[in-house]
Image 1 (cartoon, rainbow, N blue to C red):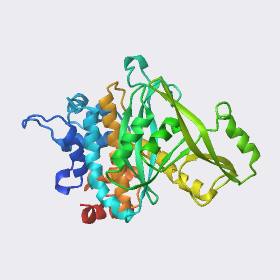
Image 2 (cartoon, rainbow, N blue to C red):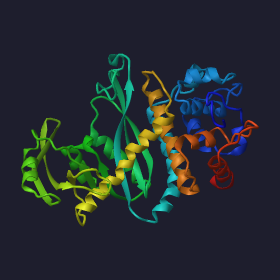
Image 3 (cartoon, helix red, strand yellow):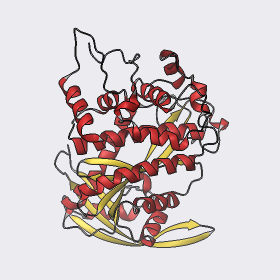
Image 4 (cartoon, rainbow, N blue to C red):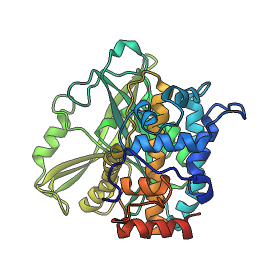
Amino acid sequence: MWGSGLTTFPTVDMSQNNIDKWLKSFLKQIFFVVGSNSPYGLAEFLQILVTAALTKDFVNNTTAKLQPAPNGETVFNRLFKCTHEKIELAFNAIMESLCKRIKQQLRNRKAILAFDTTYEPFYGNINSNPFWIHEYKPVNGCKGCFIFITVSIVVGEKKFILGVLPIPLGWNQADYVENLIKLARKYVVIEACLFDRGFCSYELIARLKKLKAGYQILWKKDKKRETWLTKELIELRPKEMEIYIKEDGYFHRNKTKYYVRTRFVIIKQYSYKDDNQPYDWVFATNRKLKSQMWYIRGYKCRWGIETSYRVTDEVRIKTTTLDKVKRYFLFVFGCLLYNLWKFANLFLKAKVTFATFVFVFFQILIEEVKKDSKPPDNIIKLRNLIKEDFF
């Protein structure tokens, strides 16, 4: 059947179609330049990376299947002298170009940003890279993980990942969020920043105030540390909302204790649309919205960010490397694939799955198929859209 057997792909000259320029540009900015006598160009490296992503395989295994092709060591050697700062700059350069089109969809409206962290399991000895491997175990059987923080922009029902940073041990969350907000402000005017429970921090609130940024943080209902919250929830009736000003929230930095005045919105036993049951909502926020529904509705638009990570897992390149640069490169490469898929869905209105998009878009419009089978109609439609409109 057409599209089966993803372990083999026909060889296609991608440069003639001019549809790989974004990823080629990304690789060109961070790959080490080799002599003109090198038998491999960016097209060959791009084919290896996308094939590994599609098959959820290791780079070494993929190069063995695509022979003649550069081996895995050769692929990663092209990252010689590369740093995570250089990868960050290359990703930002691509997004700056894409955001020019995204801003048209906003029609001068302010943008909603969503912040999140994602975890890549690590199965080796966590002491082998003590600066970057965290003790947190996101899945059973792993020994630790690498962590990345991202900021995404919400455009209607679409989410685009604007920035990605790797997280070392001992990181300061407020510093990283500030850097990502400053990056996002280069592209859009921010209406509000949305955060999940992993960002419950009075230091972060103080920093957001300093940046004069709108924010809404889903706050942890910690019965031991936040005893005031338990009391407030008991006194409220179902579906009732209360504004609570907490004067004594605090954090420590450089051996100094800082107090932060924080505004909380507390909503008891409220269900919204597809909620299976009522829920107690607690937000630390400086947003002043009309009602309970608007606070919950405003926050829920960030939930697609978790979906974006489940989607990128469909084409994640496997690796066991301890090298932070290689890990960061592979993660950012997946984020870039995700963004280009969302970009195509938004501007071409080509409603296809992530894996289908990557297969068609980057394995370059396969021209040879079995005589007794042909690609599905949505593949043919996407192929025509790419040829006619995308570039």
